[in-house]
Amino acid sequence: MGLSLTPEMILVLGLVGFTMLMLVLEWIRADMVALLVVVVIGLTGLIPSERVFNGFAGNAVIAIIAIMIMGEGLDRAGVLNLTAHFVMRMARGMESRLGVVINLVASLFSAVIPSQALAALMIPVSSRLSARTGVPLSRLLLPMAFCILTATNTTLIANSPLIVLNDLIASANVNLPPGAHTIPKFGLFSVTPVGLTLALVGVLYFYLFGRKLLPGHEDERLKVTPGRTESYFAETYGIGGETAELTVTAESPLVGMSIGEVEQLHDAPLILAIKSGSDARMAPPADHVIWVGSILGVLGPREQLAQFANNQLCRLSPRMRQLGELFNPTRAGISEVVIPPSSRFIKQTVGELRLRKRFGISVLAVTRGEQVFRDDVRGVSLRAGDTVVLHSNWRDLALASEDKDLVVVTDIPKEEQRPGKIWQAVGFFVLAKCLALFTNLDLSVAMMTGAIGMLLSGVLNMDEAYKAINWKTIFVTACLIPLGWSMDATGTAAWIAQIVLQHLGGASPWVLQASLAILTLLFSQVMSNVGATVMMVPIAISVAVATGGNPSAYALIVAVSSSNTFLLSSGHPALMMVTGPGGYKGKDFLRVGAPLTVLVLVVTLIAINLMFH
Image (cartoon, rainbow, N blue to C red; front, side):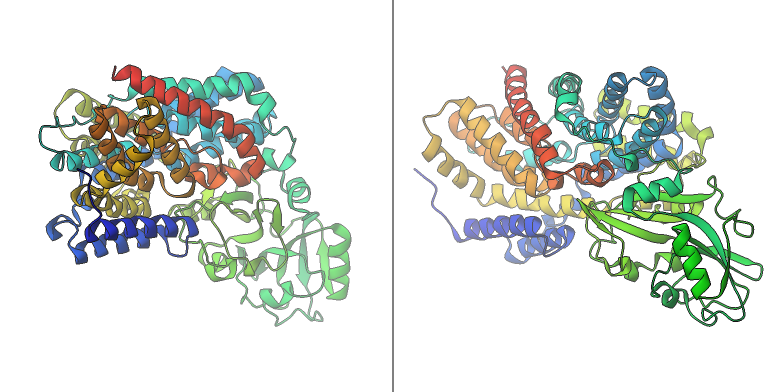
């Protein structure tokens, strides 16, 4: 006898539809949507009120927090810096070999570091290697990001959908029909055969077809090093010229004007620094007043600077006598940063952020796709994936990037913060993995042991640990897990499975599995992969139970397919972060991603069915 639609099922379906719509349209922040959904679930009693916020204390969420902390610890100890040296030695400057080594290293780390965090760590590494070898960054970043996603299913350590999977299976076990076998949970390395196969597919795909599929444009802006500031400005953003000093005389109309007012003048150069008396500073704020004798560090074409100095009665010196130390390339210069999807800067204008006043950073341009915003850059509202061009002191930039609201793309000179702690970082990381693998401890306890070990041994401090946690990801994950539970508890998943079987009832298991996988990967293109997993796993388990299939295989197909997001730049945060620095267009993702999507789909189905045969 078939299931009939109940008011509770209708409510759950409404919540699922609302969640999908909001995650696609982004009218409301994803974490706020998830919090709203969990509160509605509690108010309507879809699951018992004492379980509503259990997602926050769930094994999955605690494990993800611990993994984020350990990833930050590895970075602060200089593991990624050592990786860059290793890649350079292995590649020996050859493009084909460089791509393979970067992709292998990205795949290796993807098994233990969350995708978005790994992309943020690997972009500057790739930038450094591009600058040293002359290989365009556009030929390195997209394969690197795609290989992170193909290899992310190697373990349950760093992949949020796979970590959430066990919590969803536990919920499904409570609501299984009488006589059905309990679905076993997945171990830390249960998925490794499938993950390694997919990782190999990713690396081989780019080794064999990368040169034909990747964009071939040589773009100087993708090979920037800190010392090439002037040529970089000109070739990338049309901000040509050179740096110079303008000394404001007593007769100059600039006396008494603010920096903001001067920048509004016709043909005004970019003002990057100022010295008044003995006080010199980078990126003076817009309300900083100019006085007699002030020395402005400016950037612009020589003729424009000369004309401006003549009109405003200033003395022009092409040599940086007073401000030379501020403009030393080892201390300051130009850099590119990317706005990650989790940034608090999204939907704020450059002016509202007050980066000059807060950090001493000048914003020179913003790029979005093929658009470059140079004029009135203060009025540009930032979006996820935007590339922002800055001029700053490197130390100020490092300070600004600590909260993870921007990701530095350029390989800037920086001292690794705690290279002496590398053995402690690696040791506690390995300890956590061994505890998860060789003991019966929950993943959350094993991972948190490694995290607390790093904290106690001084690899990073508690404040740095808090900053390492992407709270938006945590809230979305913790609040969407109860949505999956409510789909099970109300019978909504079983009802949807019934509808699926009415249309595909006579189809083979391969067709059913492929349909679920395709539906999941399509959902994942437009919403979070955790959200797609939470919605699709209960349905997949219900379909498997109804058709006599293996629920573990069906659930795993869905969880793995949620990372098969190669068609759109917005499909995954790691892809959004490489779009700007790599200069990629939508057609690049389709050309490179469409064959890989089909390949990963086919290999996923074959590998998982062989594993559960």
